[in-house]
Length: 604
Image (cartoon, rainbow, N blue to C red; front, side, top):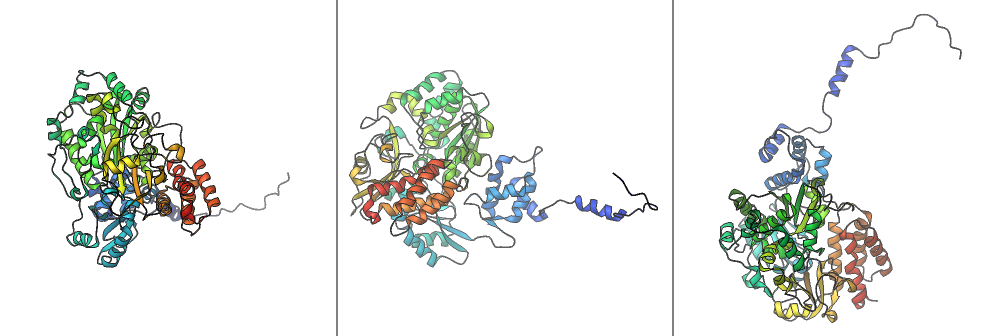
């Protein structure tokens, strides 16, 4: 290649002066993005504490957000910036977590924080109890002067419907007048109760655990640490650690009892212990007390009366499986139960009856999806509660990447009684060929709603007549939901089906957490299904398109006077086949049940 010859001298051209280069270096040395102001940093540090030597733990992000939310009743964006700095996290990561959970409200700039919030439960049981009318009257009479009234998904007090929550204080069988009195008194925190009660769940077998509606209180008396020990509590775990009791008979008793996971999945508890025990150490435990399934309140009922029986069951499981750390995940709506559990855990750890594993209580933030085990684990790790793909299963790779024993509260609650009374005690109960006890959360059109400790396999008629005092005055059984929002809807003509694991699937239903909602001739299965689908659409985590779009579109189609059954079936097929987790997979159940068992309601 020929190059032109050089013509004259080469001229030097200055690209930048020395001052220009210095200014460029100065600009690059400045941090990009929004920076925290001194006041916000000081306010955040005052709540979360000084940064420890190794930095703040990433998995405590949601706990730190709660501290801010409790004090300021919102999350100011300036505090999120300061929190990101203190925890050494990207601002985007803090923001995406804060905006995922319903109980966190991000307020921008100089916008004022929300005032006192009154939440009215719009779950199916509360809706049947008059929540719509209550909501309208409260919005008309209370809104303004620093008070706002909003709808909220099921708050886990279905036997006390309708329920309103004034900040963190639930108002049972709420009326506009009663709620106004609580607001006027500024009674915004959950009442406390005595810790000297006697409570023996085994003595309540084949009886109602919940008292009559007129005797139900926000804060029932409970068995405190000292009282529990005086009644023989923690003797089982002490004997295990002292070598007086072998582990193998304990696991065998769990297997022989037939106890299955009582959170809904129904996996045999003893088999789960063996599976996780065989995994390499270190192993951890995650306890699910999220209890977000509409119609379910059994875990709260036991927890607020007898917390240490659950804690001992957890310790026995931890020792049997070789767990070094236990994480308890409690739904945020249970403010009273959380305060109770915090206090009793502190007493246990201050004066332990035996060496304890690490125990941490984690607080949910208003996300039904976190009842799914892998979503709960994501939330415990301080992330958005989005379900994980499987495999690997959490028994192999779970919390913090370790083999994880995951259990529902009630499953652990029965460990002490099964081991001490023998596997035969638990399995001796049962009806219609089924074995074991089930804690049914019964709500809706019955005289005495509440938790009923009945034999597995009982029928809906037997449950209503023998445990609930019959149907409410002026009501006749029309339909029932055997397993909460996800479990489908059955007509009164199918009142002889045993209620247990594996018995309802042939009818397009399942028992799940045994949340039974009873409908009468004054209700419609169609409206119940619409209520459920709105709930699913509201609670979808949005991670997968079939669930995110399918639930919202289905709710819209179901509000039409005549259902487009073909399109709805297409949506059901896609949601059931392609959703990542059980929310989207079970969402079609109410639709298909109405189409199959209640076609007369659809104008077909």
